[in-house]
Image (cartoon, rainbow, N blue to C red; front, top):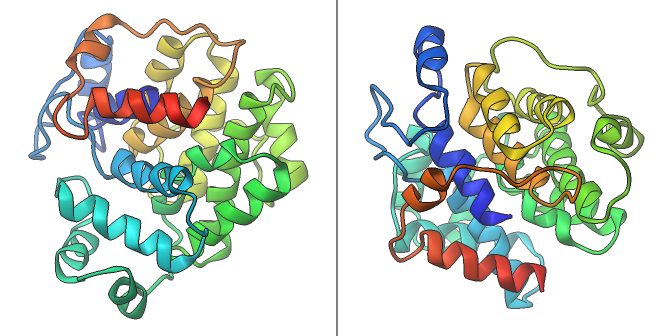
Amino acid sequence: MLIKLAIGDAYGAAFEYTNPRLVESWNDLSCYRKHPRHDIGAGCYTDDTQMSLAIAELMLSGEDWTPRNLATRFVECFKRDPREGYAGRFYDFLIEVAAGEDFLARIQPHSDKSGAAIRAVPAGLFGSIEEVRRKAEIQARVTHDTPDGVNAAVAAALMAHYFHNELGPREEVGDFLVQHVDGQWNCPWSGKVGAKGWMSVRAAITAVQEGSSLSDILKRSIAFTGDVDTVATIALGAASLSDEIEKDLPAALFNGLEDGGFGRTYLLELDRKLLS
């Protein structure tokens, strides 16, 4: 799951809010590319994966699922491996805060953007729908304590839960989500994806419902244009848990993913522990 999520993130990072003509030209899954304006290297993941790592590591730690412990993990994951991809003001905020308590004291958690949803996929591995809902909401409220921010995170986590537990075919995941969280999750997305969390989640749902394989889902996620690294992160993370979806990502994307201290090898080991 984490490795697929990171591949979607790293591949999508080159296309975030780029010219649609560039998306059409580059989106062939042949390799990673560098964004024409950003400093993120080809094959490097962004904040989307790093924040998901924070969630996964807290899950594996056995520590209580509290705002303090979540904030502590967010700060620790960033401090050990500062990287591009965060929104400018939040990046500066993470540079300045010293620990989880400082994070909570200073954060203004009023965003309805996608930050809480991009890190929510690992929470879909909790044992019940209610537990997934509750824990996705707790982690969302740390930074995105708005109805849309919370609902987008809960929907992303529940999509992963739906596939992990084989609760139905991929075409019906939107119908499942509207039963458990407010939002038009069964309404297909089309066109450019904006910064709001619900937009990225709806686009990810559409890509998964319409794609039969991970390669197809990844290309569809990027083809929307806009905030497509977020779409690809959520879509591939959730879809990778489905036995119905073919796991056919090109070797070039697997082998080309960064493999430093918290790269490919580390992600694979965390996946093994999460899914065992």
